[in-house]
Each structure stands twice: as structure tokens, then as C-alpha cells.
Image 1 (cartoon, rainbow, N blue to C red):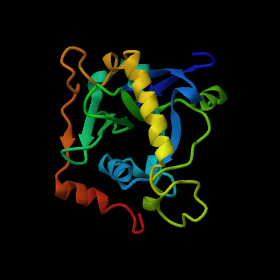
Image 2: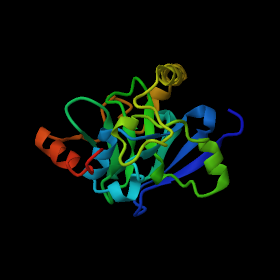
Image 3: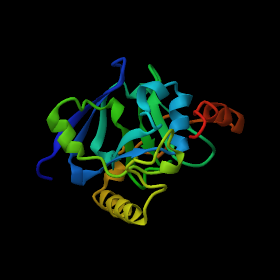
Image 4: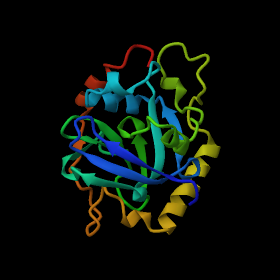
Length: 211
């Protein structure tokens, strides 16, 4: 793919390092998610103040998991689920830096990387991620959202575009290269911490009123 960039990944304490390869605006989708689940995740790992924007949004780059690899500290990766179903949310066990969200099986090789763990301070890296698309799940956003450039949910066109990307990644074999799954067994490389209803409610209660 032409005009792509390699972007470094690093947790806040430096125990985990990695790289996202082949990054370009066409290789993924750069957006902000305001959903209550993403907000709950950041509260669960104590990173809400560091990651969430003023409206409770998480800046994410949705990309193929096959384009992400860890060069140091993969044994420090931890994951949680907000319940028995739903996405698997990855973070650094050493310092709780959020890494990204995947599905619970490698067949569909998707990861929504939380850009807070990416080295995007230079212009080339920012260009590679591309401009932010309209945000999603504005109905969960905090504060005055009247001027927020976001959809109340997820538009069907975005869902269709995402499915096309997933099929493309699957076709080229990226499901065999996801760093979040054991290549032999297809199992997650870490046992998820599954929040109970009480634990989830306690974290969700930390979201300010109106979110």
C-alpha cells in the first residue's frame, strides 16, 4: 500500500512496546467513540482522566490486528470484558495504559487501537491516521453536545464500510497474525477479567451524570 506509515506503540511506563505498520487513512478508520462501554472501560482501569475527552470520547483508530505487533512486553498484556459477551478490551498490566478493543476470536482480525498509546506527535503519523470521521454514539456523550460532530449511534454506511474492510483483512490472512491470539490454538493470549454486574455498575456509576 502506497504512502503508508509505521507508528510506534508504547505504554506509559515503557514495559510494552510495539508498532502499527502499513498505516494510512485508507487502511483504517479514525474516529471518536462516546459510548458508555468505552467510558466504563477507562474508569475500570483508572484511565478516564488521561484518555477521555471533555465529552467522554475515546480517540480510536480501527485497523487490522494483523498490522499490529508487539516488540517488547507482550506478556504484560491484560484484557477485560464488561460482561460475558461483547468486545475484549486490552490494556497494559504494568501501568493500565489502554491498548485497544478486539473481538473474542481471531476469525475477524479487527482492533480498535486507543490512540493514546500511539506515538502520533509528528505530522507524518497524524496524516497516516487521517482526519477524524464523525464520532459515534453521541447519545452517551457528556455535557452540551449540540455542536458535537457525531452520530447518535453508528450509521449503516459506516457498518457496511467496516464489514468490507474486515473481509479484506480476513482474505489476506490477517487473522493468522493477530498478536492477541495464540496462533496454534486461536485462544486469547490472556484470560479476560470479566466484570460482574456489580463491578460494571460500580465503574459505570463513575461516569458523570448526563453520560
